[in-house]
Image 1 (cartoon, rainbow, N blue to C red):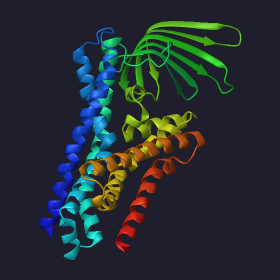
Image 2 (image 1 turned 90 degrees about the horizontal axis):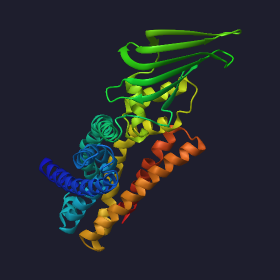
Image 3 (image 1 turned 30 degrees about the vertical axis):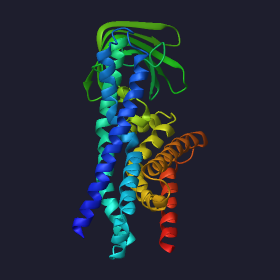
Image 4 (image 1 turned 180 degrees about the horizontal axis):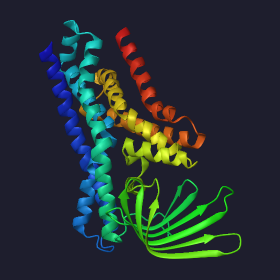
Length: 357
């Protein structure tokens, strides 16, 4: 039995690896075509384009793991069905639950890899890719608006013209308001360096304090600015929420909630990040009834086509659920779990019908 389990797991892993490589090459080609549009802007030469495409690969691995696992498992099981090995397995006393357990054993490995790429490799590589691209084109890491980045910290609004690649700030303006939302002071600084423990060392400082009768201006070469903002919070603005790590999403969502700002998009992305490895397991279980169902319908092409259609359906449902959850303000957990639950129910119904035949 152990030899049989190892054989099935090996077939699933090999098929999934081949599918993953094929999909990554396809995504890399699309990324290359997209990045070539900016070729020649500033210092964005071909070597930077290639580096950007390579650094985007870990993020794509995370995104397409459920689809690759589905198609790979579908192909591997379909091959067993076509060669009658699956029929012999079942006739020799191997139960459906045992087959599912074997598939989930490989799924646990895939789920762990999905977590590693989604939490560590993907976000880190994506941040490097965005830094590389921005530095090559403009020399600026992040610039959300023409006037720079705008952030809220308690009763203060912060405007940063530029964030450099090493997390330093240029062109800082801090607008502080009182309890009645009246402007109390405005401080500007040419440069800011993070010193740790919520402390920023500002240089070229000019602070204007507004009183009831006049405005007091204080100029000094340097000053310490206390803020909950840290370089890691500023760095999350460089990437989309879906490409951030769960830890960064949790911290930034908490920062937004503490400042009474909308955090639902980041909460949905957080729960999607947590539940995404479960989607890999669900898609692999779903491959079992589809592989058996496809035994008389077409050959390899038909099975791969069925897997691609299922994968696309999951991808679009995942996107739709996130957008609907954001628009209708559904609970973040529900928006993130809905696609996985729908496909798990589909797999359960199909397996039940298969066993009744």
